[in-house]
Each structure stands twice: as structure tokens, then as C-alpha cells.
Amino acid sequence: MSCLHIKHLTVTFETLMGTVVAVDDVSFDHESKETLALVGETGCGKSVIASSILKLLPDNANLSGEILYGDKDLLRLSERELADIRGQEISIIFQNPTLALNPVYRIGDQISELFRVHKRASSKKSKAYATSLLGRMGFKDPEHAFHMYPSQFSEGMNQRVLIALALALHPKIIIADEPTKGLDDQLKEEILKELMKIKEEKESSLFLITHDFDAARNIADRVALMYCGQIVEIALSPDFFDEPFHPYARGLLKSLPSHDFAPIPGASPSMISPPEGCRFHPRCAERLEVCSHEMPEPIKKSGRIIRCFLYR
Amino acid sequence: MKKPALPRQNGSAQKKSLSSLLAVVLFLVFFILALCANIIAPHDPWERFDPYLPPSVEHWLGTNDLGHDILSELIYGSRVSLLVGLGAAVLATAIGLCVGLFAGYYKGVTDEILMGITDVFLMIPRIPLIILLAAFLKPSFWIIALVIGFLWWTSTARVVRSKSLQVSEMNFVLSSKCLGFSDKHIIFTDIFPNIIQIVIPKFMLTVAAAMITEASLSFLGLGDPSMKSWGMMINFAFTKGGLINALWWWFIPPGLCIMFFVYSVVLLGYSLEEKEQAVLGIS
Image (cartoon, rainbow over the protein chains, first blue to last red):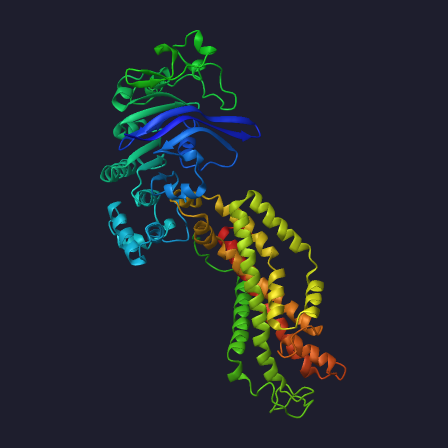
């Protein structure tokens, strides 16, 4: 059963420099209980997809397409209806955890506030919930952690608090926007492990946005690769990493230190005036004649979805 | 944000802390005077003795034309003056806070409308309007406090708006939104606590402005004659011949009281503001 359908989502931003097409005709399904990793380089529109699911984009963004959650189109819900979905049905974990916590409240109060407001629990009960949740997130002394301010915690501890916040109300979908950015390897592993553990327990699905291939390989069921606002390949994680189809995917994997460490030639294109035809063709080693003037459409091929003329 | 303690405070910092200490002491003295007026005052302010008595051991500040003890009047008067000042400032700060918070959080049309209203209020000539209102309405100090409150919120609204614009762009507001909290909840429990440090000094300065206004109005004879505020005392001294006959004990003390209280409040406001700036690393 799939729980989130994204159909032909296009997001553009009006800026002084021109119209930026941040997300261009993106369609994918997010099955329930699965872990889907959205990978791609910085600035390719990954976070914009995450933000548009919960409609958190600034006013100069234009969205078109559909984001279906159950029978509701999230793009057409009112703020009020969205408030009921945010946090309780779909929650998001941001990068920069320290900035995402209110500096004037204690950690515990920020967590128990959720239970007080959404579950109408008494303050004593909410406190108990919050403390147990902190304990589950790997704090040795949750009572002590409850009374700390975000500024007294390290980045990694705050990230765990943020994950606790996002998971507190047992959402069906967890969106994690680069949850491990700026953390050291050991902490990264710990946090991902924690995230997966709770995700399994609550039977939620996880939508992981990352540019960390190792993380994607380790925890994702499926991988979606983005390039310049488009999804160029969606495949099961083992397939994707064993034998990537799209030339960009091959190039990326080759550029990893554990492989050839050979970078893809050229630079990522401008989002304001993207190249004609296939977005990737100026950097592609296997380009065909057709690539430079025609845009490939996504097609299904041996269980994958791919946007490339090589597999037509 | 914690800075290492400086080994030695320099002269100006010491002077600053001294002046804020002075402000706190003055403020507390007046506050206690107003709170415990019935214990501290030597006489009932309405009790009549011989009129025009100069200062003596019995009447430290003499008596007025009706034979009321001026020291007692002064002490009881602090109640009225402080109440008007604080009441008006509470009202003004509450209005300014709400306007600023909503304008800064919702932005766009809401912001335009609310700031438009603020601009209109800024243009109103306030003292003439109050004089006009006081002439038409029954002069009572509640009405004066209300009117002052309704006219003095504009600068608070502007300051709060600019800060709330800034705070509402911070990530924790976004993350509160993602956790499904309502706008009202976010405004009052997420944004408000983050701007309280700039509201308090603003509040203090509004108290000072309200007290000066109340004193001016009372002096012009537009105050509440049944409530003896400090401004009213000067008004009586002026109209009942205290000034012409140089009965200094009648009009100097209330003037000094107004001056010292306003001074203490302003100083308190400034030192709070400076502390805030020091924390933020401005100045």
C-alpha cells in the first residue's frame, strides 16, 4: 500500500534573477513502512520537495501538481487542515538542530508541550511521556536532560531531541532532511540507527533526504536520484548501488572515494536557465544525438523508473 | 553566549551599574511609598489643620490652603500617579505587543493594515487630543489612563514588529509549525518569549511618558480633582496662590517626586536596554 503519491510536482520560485525551476515534474510513490532515500547534490531541489510536502515554502514559490496523502491533496488543504496533519501524520526533521529548537525553553518542556497541546494530556503525564521519550533517544539521564536548554546540548544531542520531537506523536511518515549533516561519523551512525529503530517500532515510513551515499545504502529500501530538479532514476537500493542505470548515477558512484574517485566533468547547471534537452547531456559521457534537443520522459524499465534515452 | 568575566570593570561600566542601582533603589522607594501609603503617611491627606503652615516638626512639608498635610498628600499621591502611569503603560504595551506580533508573524496584507493603523495613530497629535477628550469626558483618572494607553502603543508596536519579523523567520518557528502547532500558539509561546527583553525596557519608557502626560494634564486642570496625584498638587498650588506667594514646600516636592520617579523609570529602561544590547553584542 502506498501512502504518499507525488504526481507531476513542479515548484518554481520567482526571484529577481528570473524564474528558478527548483523541482521539475517530479512523480514518485512513497510506500508505507518503506525507507525511501532521495539523493542528489546540493541545490538540486531535494529539500524543496520535502518542504512542499508540508507546504512550508516561502510566498514566492509556485507549486503545481498533486501530493496525495490518502485521499487528500496536501497542496490544496487549508493551513488549519494542514496543522492537523503536520506532526501527527507527517513530521519532518530538519538540518541544523540547534536552530530548530526554541532557545528560551527547556528541552523537556518543548517535548511535553506537544502532548499537552495535541493529546490534551495533563502536564504531569506529558512530563512522564517526554522523559521516557528522552530515555528512548539514548539519553543516559533523561531527568537531567529534561531540564537542559538547547544551548547546553551538543549538536548531536539536539538532533536526537529533534528526532524525539518528530516521532513523539507517532506520525505515519517521517521526513528527515539531511538529519546527519555536520555530524561526525560515529554520531551519524548512532542517530541513523536510533531513527531506524523507532521507525520500525512505530511502523512509520521514512523519507530520507541526503547526499550521503553510505547512509542511503545502509538504511534505504529504495533510492531516488535527483539531478537539477528532476528525478532521473528510482530503483531498489541494492540494484541502484550494484548496477546504476543512469549515466549520472554511474558517474556519482564512480566519484566516491571508495570507488574510482573520478569526478564527473563539468559543473551542475544553473536552475534558472537549465540546458536544453536532457539536463545532464553536457556532462554525459554516453550522450546520443537526441539528448541535446529532446527531454527524455521517465519510463519504467526492469523495476526501475529512469529518465534517459539510453533505455528507450 | 557566555563571555569570560573581565578581570576588572572599567570606569564607565562601574558608573553604569551604579546608576542602574540608583534607579532600582529610587523605583523601589516610590513603589513602597505607594503600596504602604496608609502606614507611612503621618496623617490622613484629607484631615484639616491650619492652612499655609510652613514646614515644621509636626508637618514636615507644611500644609496647603485647606490645611491638608502636604507630606501625606505627596505619599498618597504616589498611588494615583503610579497607578495611572503603570495602568496606561500596561494597556499601551499590551496593544503594541499584539499589533507588533501579529504584523510581524503574518506579514503581507495583515502587516500592511496593522502598520497602516499604527502610522495613523502616530500622526494623531496626542496631547491636544487628550485635552479635548478630557474636556468632554468626565475627568477621572481611569479614563486618563485608558486614553493614554490607547495613544501610546505605536512605538512599541513598531519595535515588536521588527523583532518578530526576525524571530518568525528562525528555524524553531518553522519546526513548531511542522509539529502542528497553531499560529496563535506559535506567536504567544514561541515568538513572544523571545522578544520579551525588548518589551520590558519599552514598557518602562512608556510608564515614564504616561506619568509625564498625566502630570501635564492634571496641571492644566484636566485631571481628576477627587484624586490627588502629583500633577494635581502642582495644579492646586498654582491655582490657589502657592506659586505667587512662594510657598515652596507646596509645589517643589511634587515636582521633585515626578522628576525622580520618571528619572528612575527611564534609567531602569535604559539599563535593561543596554543589558540586552550587551547580550546581543550590539553597541
